[in-house]
Length: 582
Image 1 (tube, rainbow, N blue to C red):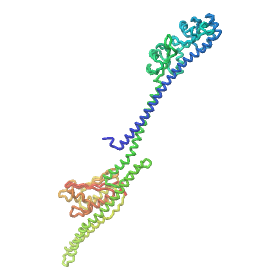
Image 2 (image 1 turned 90 degrees about the vertical axis):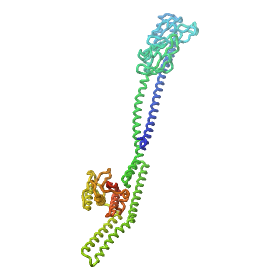
Image 3 (image 1 turned 60 degrees about the vertical axis):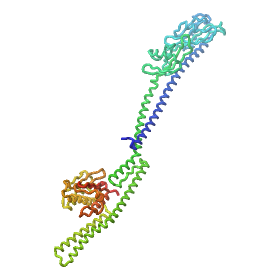
Image 4 (image 1 turned 180 degrees about the horizontal axis):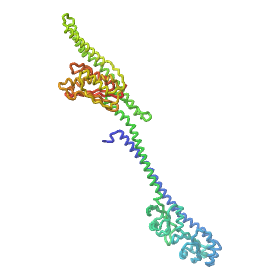
């Protein structure tokens, strides 16, 4: 079965697909925008952290340079350095070192590069300090570094001189700051990043475990560019930044790392929430799509069902119920109203056509009625002649009197049947037990025919019906009587005889079937069985079935005849349980 053959399915699928695509596109756009913003925020944050490290390095050198120049310009220090006496210089150095508490190295060398005094915790050989002394020819400040165990020592050197000129240099003041494990821990707190310092591809201090240092050392060779590295079960974004100009010991580097795994972990939860939201949105969209599809196609389905019932039962009085206007589409309401108006018009036309057919039938029956009346009149006239004869014998008088009485009865029956057929039937509708009504009709028909043997198959679950019991009984007596006569006319009656069955057709209709095993009706005569005064029996009037049809249709039902020569006849009556529609 093609699922797209149904209008409901097509509307539902189109609406559902549109909703799913819209929700999916919205979720995808939001998810992509949030992810891109998170990645950009991570890259921006690690760039700011790298800049902070470089700013600290510049600030340290600038501060040391300023402090060193101020101390180197003190006359007392110049006088002590000029003595070249280490004890004298150390006394003044300890005094002035208090002015630079952040210095891990405070050293003074003479103009020959000999170290006179060194204070602080930094472990730097004298040869390194001698190399950091100011050149007597240039007298310019110098910046250098020295790799040491546990970190890097940043060195700032300023000249100590009396007057300008190369011959006036007394010595060099050397200050140093360590980038060691304590500093990387401090940087981690300030930047919320992992920090590492190293030289020549070798990490000397870092906040990460030492087993990761060989991997980090490879990142020191690419300063400025962000790179990705996996350490254990975490992925990091890393940026290397130079810590000053390269020297004889290589290029000091700082490495800033941020965990992409931790910083972007919220994206996983966000993706789950977005996925759950998408599923719920799609579910709601599908429900609403189906509801929309049903509101559009339900009126069509209702009309289709009503038309199918009309085709099956022939009941043109069916109406489409009008639902609550708050939930009913205006187009659907207009369609239902138009359909109800159409059925009203068809029903009215059918009533008019039935009335015209009845009047036309009466016109066609005039010759039949004249013939039916003329024959009794001729018999009565002949009998009266016999009675006028003076020589009439008593037997002849009695015979003539009996003939007159029989023909008067026949005339009265003809007039009664014609009146019943011609005039509108007034129905008195009330609850009636169809099974009890069927039993009563069978008894009456059997009494009139002077025989019995009609077999009953009654549905005990059949509910009471709103109908005119007396009129329906009259129709059933006519139909059962015809069935009994049909079986009696057969030379060798069938074994099945006459059967009457009742059953429930659907929640609103019941069916009564009268079957006989007579010789049946010829195919050419079958369409005319309901025509007034049409009969294939010599003694029949041919108006019983016509009256029965008027009664059944007046009660809102339908009567049909199915027959096959040699196999009998079935008369089927369908009646509404709720009574005829006005």
